[in-house]
Length: 494
Figure 1 (cartoon, rainbow, N blue to C red):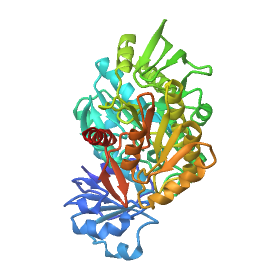
Figure 2: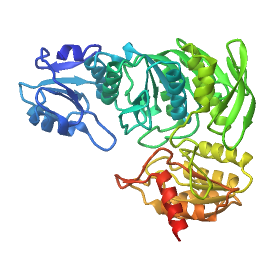
Figure 3: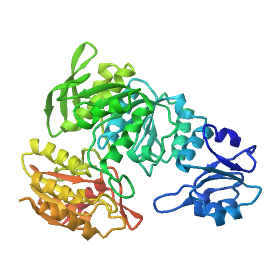
Figure 4: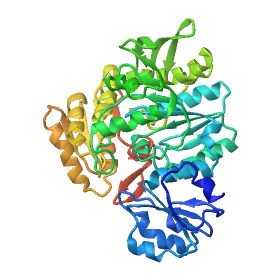
């Protein structure tokens, strides 16, 4: 593609060299660069792409796009005359716009639905995708687990929302696959770091807001975290927000051009759920679909499932989905790592859930406590290199709500896992909750299984869909579903 077309829409660029160049591909990793590629240097949290500019040129880059305040003068002097240099104020934003242009703005060729919020993003996107597919609509799904076209996986995702270059490539594949609608999780980081800049959103959803992702590598404070999420509604035409979340009330004023509708349980809203019943296998409720009040049964237990379902229903109604298709899709919904019950030979109730914040942990533990006849056994940890403030809060929540807590590891990353466990323990000590610390997560799960009976429920919180433990920048296989059954098989053999 012609370089001028790739740079279309980017303003205040400083250019040295020829713009009449045909570019093969855009790359932001110097090691992947080949002849006639364009290399865009990104300054990351751990690594600065500007340090790799000369390597990119050696590998064949004919165009370098760098950040004005990021490029070293010594490197600047070494760039050959036959290489075009483009300087901009923000290369993350430039990468996103360049990627949109390179892939011919694929998001404009489909209806794009973005789901943001602290919790519920993955489940809500799965619900929307299932309903629309049931209606006969071809759907692309992008999120924490992976990217799919009508349940066929087309890419693994390292981030909840892929980096802009990969995201536009995925969109392009979805256009080729003739997707009519794409539903995607939109993280606060992706909004803050311009990963979704240039995307043409039709609908935005705000599930809820709670403390999370506060760290030097994510958001410095809650205000920054919230404002990042609000950006989605400044980019879309229509929005559906949770009327029971106090923060959601601010969105209409902050994004006045977006047409906002509401859904909820407790407060006045456009789509209201009533007569809610929660069991250990499902939740059901009444909601008005068209002219009739319909009873919806969802195969994911918990009050939070009502909110996720309402968001999905609000979108489904926009696409003319029938009541029958909505009801059948939600009845049969399965989401990896979200209130996922693990089938096992001992007949124990073991649930894997992605709850990794104080609020989400409290919600899942409180939800199951209502209908559990025996004990609630909580197995959880906190991630390393992330918000340390939530660690004692998580401990306090589990100590207060669960009948027994086992504090363990959950992606310690570059931190000492024992230190993280001790941070959590400071919170649980404030309660009268019974607990123990087992740093090895597999051993922690084994202890929970050994102490449980059929009346109890074991909540394995934090990892959810993840199938790894991240330790010192390396990911080791850790599929909790498999591990549970391996432990039980070993127990049965003995």
